Structure formats: C-alpha cells, structure tokens
Image (cartoon, rainbow, N blue to C red; front, top):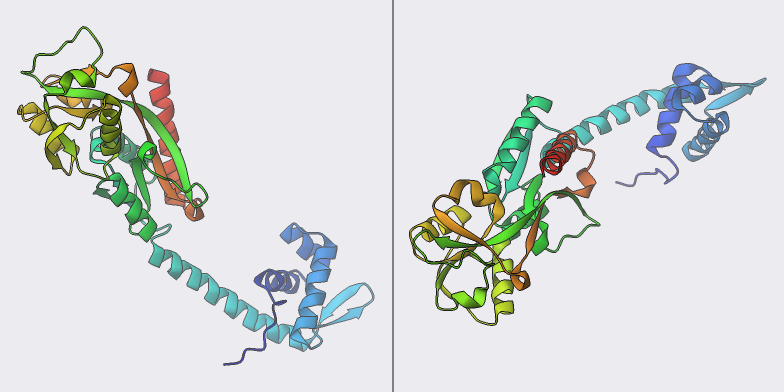
Length: 310
C-alpha cells in the first residue's frame, strides 16, 4: 500500500491541531499546551501545507476552520485513540506498567535484602504481584537482556554492565570471608592468609555466580590452584557442604547471620580482601515504568537505612 503521508505530519502537529479545534483560537490553544502562539500558528501552517489542501481561512486576526479541517479532526481523533490503544497493548506485551513485576536475584540476597524490598513494595503498591527468579549473575543478566525479567539484584563487581543501556542503583558493599567447618583448627588471632590453607579441600560456586570470580582471583593472588571437591549452583548448598566438613570456601558477609554459629568465618588478609557491590539493575529505556520507579525508590530507602545503621 502506497501511503501518501509526508514526514512533516507528526503526532505533535496533530495534537496542536486538535487543541486548536477544541479551544477555538490560537491564544487559548497555546495556553492549554504551554506553548507560544507563534509555535501553534507555525504547526497549523505546516500541517496545512503537508495535507495539501486549505484547512483554514483568515478573518481579521482570527483563524477559521474550513469543512476540510473538521473532516481531518474526526480522523485525527480516531488515529490518536488507536495509537493510545496500540501503546497500551505494546506495554502489556512487554510487561511494562502492569500489575506484575518480574525480579531476578542472587540466592544469597533472599535472606534479608529481597524480603525487605518486597515488604516495602507491598506498602507502596499493594496491588502489585512480584515474581521472583533466583540464579547466577550471568543467568540473570541474560534474562534481563532477553526481557524475561524486569529488574535484577546482582553483584556488579563481577559483571560487565553497559551503563548506556542499563540503569544501576547501588545498594551496599559486602566483604568476602574465608568459611571453614566448625571442626577445623584455625588461626583465629590473625587474618586468614590463603597460602596457609594450600592443603585444604574447597567447595565452590559454579562459574557465572557472583562469588566465583572473586574465588578465582583470590587463589590466583595466593599463587596456587585450590583442590575443589565440588562446584554447586547455589550458595546455600555450598555452605551446607562447608557445615558438613566437606571443605572450605569463600563466603559473602551477608550470609553471616545464618551460618556464624555453624561455620567459622575469618576475615581475609589484605592481599585477598575483596568486596562485592550489590545493586538493582534494569533497562534504562524503562526508567519511567511506575513499577520500576517504585522499586528504585524502595532500593534507595534500603541503601540509606544500611548507611544509617553502619
């Protein structure tokens, strides 16, 4: 189909045209649209040129619509209503601004951070349903890129984040500790030098998880390859193995409250010390989504509360 519509006919000009037809003159239309009278007049004039037929006639200082203008108005109203419905349907398809928010998170953040955010979101938007998906840093970033998640909570320290396309809201920094079975004999009066644990067995998270990259880097600095008994796909399984005496591991401090009575925790010596920066990440082109705005606001409040209690 060959549509004879030029680039000069825009929704902005049609909106100004409809406002003028509703208000009856340029001055009132300009006031309603918060524009200058010159801008309104220019839009009407260029629209008339693009339509390629007379729409108005001048009577003194007034602009009077011709029958062609009233005909055009009917179709303008139809097309703008149709476009509004189209935009609504597109947002529904994308899951934007609906009654459900799909959030991805690291397993370790389900102990405190995620429950706090969910409780705050329920107060802000009681009607909102939140779907929770748990996975590794890499998996969650991939799902966000695919559009199957609306926002994710990850460690951005171990990930390449494209700040031109992704919005990042930092929540807190978290230190990494050496985790050992309760039965292990440790030098608790000094910081943990990983070289002293060269003969120990270790358990680790699988590649792609937040703590995995730090684990690899720490032992690279220590100058040896640890004997890894097994790799697991969630931090709770990893620490259960540490509890059972299967091996040592490296653990983020946010897990301390649950495991400090059953797992020995040692702060790492200076060469191996590292932090994770936990953040909420979502697509920048969705920064005006009301659900994501609410999540970001709750995230800022949570981050502020941690700073106040520090």
